[in-house]
Length: 638
Image 1 (cartoon, one colour):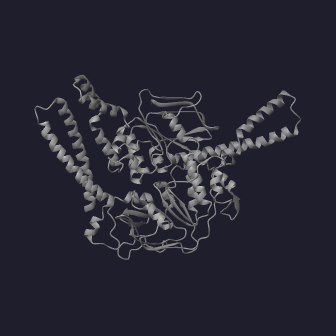
Image 2 (cartoon, rainbow, N blue to C red):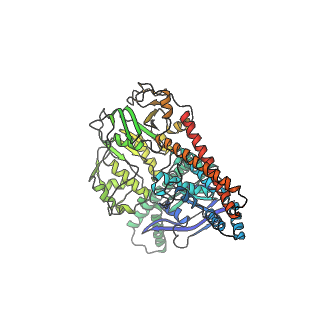
Image 3 (cartoon, rainbow, N blue to C red):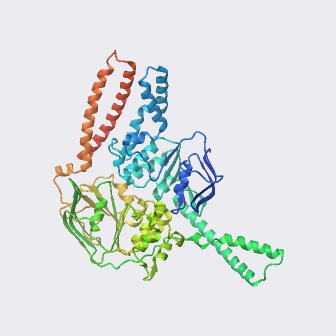
């Protein structure tokens, strides 16, 4: 099988910190490879070097198969804020964009050879259907209007545009850095299906373990600058990695026992005078290198204490909240219980983050009552991450919160010791926060939340940028967490492992309580919708509510059939329906005008060609608009 990529003796440093040293590997055609490593180990740096954004050091070489096209999805995609979405995606495939530009310029000249070449290039690259393919991909990614400016988009929307730019290239080699960050679960599932079926070769960094398990057939682990290879998916990786660590531990224990005996011999023997003694001293030096420093086997420790939590947690009764005309929460009633772990799911803009802020007391409800128990101590991990002052060091950030931290066993440790447990050794305490990797910032942020000993944890997208090893330790801590836990996350593995049931935000303020796991919900959501809730179907306390019969409407009374039909569409969907109707009317009018021009026998050839291309664009656009409009109409009438 052909080697698409060959990497030899690759080295990269960040200041005096060596990220990886003389690593070598190859990727064959059809391989789907994931790179796993702890935060700050150099994952993104390695991808940047492979994609040509950074240069390798020393004598390292990177060799792609001659002529192979490489598409790169960055973790934080760059874009032109003045471009429309369509213009941004168009710019991703430079060959097609150049062909389009050349064709448009050729139309304005009488140079028939130039026009013929431009037409041939458009045929060869299928440039005639370029915008139609872009619109179709964006539709699969559940993206709305494509004429919006990039500078107005949210982080999740920017990621979708970048994904569309990657997919439109149809490159045989794809590099991706955290492709699932900020995406809805439905979009992640679409991407998962696409990448599983594609013949393209993949090299990616991802913390999404379901995604990794179902897409990848090879896993590279980068540890202490060394690369380890595992053939198989994530499940097999866990098994083989455990074997490797067990073997290494056995070898290290054997080496340490021998080291102790040799050290005793050296200390009890006068300085070596013979060749044999000198040889033994040299062997002792190599043995010392083999067992390595203790820091090489550091593991994250999350064992922060939890403040005492009384029986009254949060009582919500008929809570309602709205922004403008669009309700985000309507008549929500629920009593939270101790040790309850709830997942929160729903599309973008339906009110999930607003709901979290309401519970935390940061927003006032428009109506209804919200009562906090006197012992509740919130820990709110926000999606936007840690905030810090320019110039703050790692130690500054935590020292401003407390000097000592209470642990789960009742003991107290200094913040310096607590930092070390979170893999921030003394050598990193004076490092400026702005110099940390994205994952290290997230880990530091998590530390600042837990050191306050909260008993009601609110986690809004906590898995973004955290490495898999950190997630495993965090999950173990949260499984044993004796307080309340509320999670918003696109990570199905994380949600399945922790959330006992779900609050499902359906739009227009409707919240349902789903009595199952996240993956179960997304598997069954295509089934017939549950009947509307009765007038007494308020969510009760977590201990007494009967969830066996399926989802329960969150505090909503039954509405007349006609009212419920209209409320099937969200405010944004209704606005989109109006936009589509206006756009279709304008396109139909332009189509009629062009039909008249194309029937004019005296019209110049260049103008007829230009009109024909525009007619093709209009027909493609009308097809997509009608498809979207009929889908919204079906949803409204269902």
